[in-house]
Image 1 (cartoon, rainbow, N blue to C red):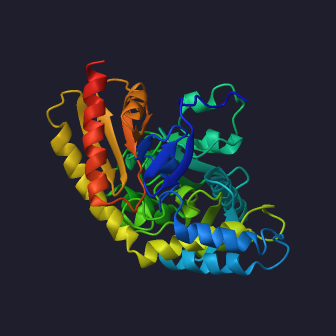
Image 2: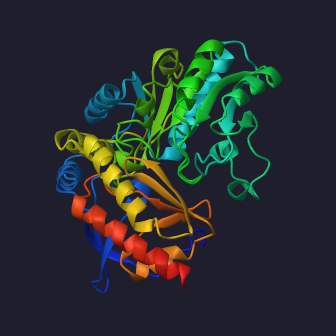
Amino acid sequence: MATYQRLPVSFERGEGVWLWDASGKKYLDALGGIAVCVLGHAHPSVGRAVAEQAGRLIHTSNIYHIARQEELAKRLASVTGLDRVFFCNSGAEANEAAIKIARLYGHGRGVDAPEIIVSQGAFHGRTLATISASGSKKVQAGFEPLVPGFVRVPYDDLSSLAEAAQEHRNIVAVLIEPIQGEGGIVVPGKDYLRGVRAECDRRGWLMMLDEVQTGMGRTGEWLASQLADISPDVATLAKGLGNGVPIGACLARGEASEVLAPGTHGSTFGGNPLACVAALAVVDTIEQQGLVQHAADMGRRMTKGLGEELSPLRNVREIRGRGLMIGIELERACAGLVSTALERGLLVNVTAERVIRLLPALTITPDEVDQVVALLGESIRAFDHG
């Protein structure tokens, strides 16, 4: 079905941050499968783990114990500080699980029609519930009627939470991204997440963070919420969790971790042995190679380099982000810049119409960071004069 506007290129192999197309042309991948390939392409530890597990056992069912799933749950709980995990297959499914947790939590407190605060500019997935929670009219168009039960407020605006509480008496949770990804790499003020945490504590709401794009070390911490030194009640992961093998996770702590019971939720494929060994290889490699700190270091290098490279360009409005989640906002719409960069062997994308988004592998080297900076500068100059 015609659901994608694909670029005129097909890749045959990859290694680290590099991809080769069918003609043998080499590309520097600064998008990482949209934040998925945190270890880069064809990482040997993931390849070995998946190959060995595929030859042993791919799938049983969640009606049985799955040892690798239990091991992965413990590892994720350890690095995130949360208690329990539900495994699924994507970020949208992880966010669906979070929404269901919030509704069950509300019903358990006697709220017949629970409501969840969400943000303008947010993106939480493509299912009916997650597009309803998202803040994009473009994503929602044509799929009405939307799922009810969401109260939309401005992002990075603490006063709006109190105002929403006055107007809506059935609020039970807040669902936000710690950094808005599809919304244009929007980084909130330093006190925003702490303020949301305090408001949720004050009112008995669940604080639920969509860390699908920001998690797994992307921002220089395992979870972006750790940058603010707070812990959510619920956090969702996917994208980088399996380095390309589909897997999602909804993590929770405290009362939120005890809401789901047998029969209330499930997944046929979620947390099967194959997906879990891939995710375990990712967690192991990130820990063993110190990639969380490396992402922070390389992010600072890239941001500094971009600042120097792009400072003479009047079309560049702002460079922002955390770790290796970086956005460059231009003065005008720049979707065509993706093709301009592609011609020069650089893979990027554009979100929110005029924000160039960079999400390279956490394994990127200093030299490769400098190459991204140089190629992007060249691409923006060519686009400006095109």
